[in-house]
Length: 393
Image (cartoon, one colour):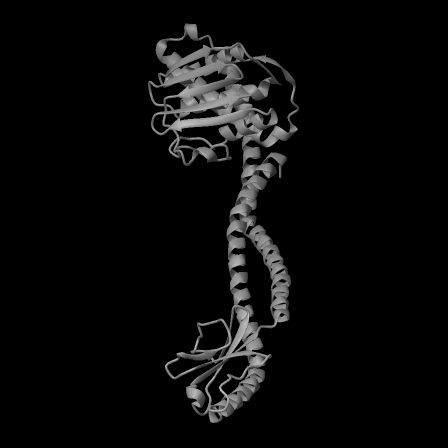
């Protein structure tokens, strides 16, 4: 597989990988969060059950003290306290009778639960000592338990996350395999096509150039003109495909290029195409500029911009080419580009309008050449009205 195609494939893979991994990582984080909450609640319930037996013994001791206070209330009216826990008693309507802790909201639907790093046990005495229907004990939760749970969640969470990401990466590579094979097949097709096109295209172009059109009648001259346009179209396509597949093998021969002369030359080259659509072409040179660049590559860049301006233009439309200080731009009065598609135009096979022929490789080649010489290419367009492509440096 050629380097040029491989670069494009990697770019497509990276975009797909980014989108896939964004969704995959969000899904993975959500899944791990749910599993983490389930594990945390499970461990918390396990810890509460371990504490329930001990707290029940303490609650029974407190109930005996409440019974003693109830029997000897006339002699001793001091609520029994214990350094190991705090407690509170409530009547049958869940109204507080007496409490030694600050928490006022008690969840009477649970037997044992944890809230604000405190463990609460609710027990109902056999008799209503001092009017008590509910006895509530409060003890601090074990901080070691919380630390152990958090450490386990972090360690296993990271390991599972990495395993899932690793698995997701290879799953995506497997899913991308058909795309890679399709591009390899297209690569072979283009190579075979360009090879077969070379000889007949050169023969057609050479023979057309040898024809003295001044000696032909008007009807035959028009036919020759159409053949010339068709041959140039095939020649341009052949050159694009050749550049696309062999760009990495082409050695750049950079030189000082007079852009004004070159643009005028390319306008003349495309004059037949413009005449066939009755296009009005204008060229404005605001600044005489030169670029140190490979001549064939800057021609390829210009040709693709002008070719697109012709291809996507309307009959009797216009093309305005402007050369200014550190930029040149091509403005056409054609179909325009949907604003949502503009960012995709430099991708290979992207086309603004599927009804117009072509492979969608022109702007991709423009982008490749621009990257090589640090040129900036921008597209501005209004759908159904105009498109402007500017190349600046």
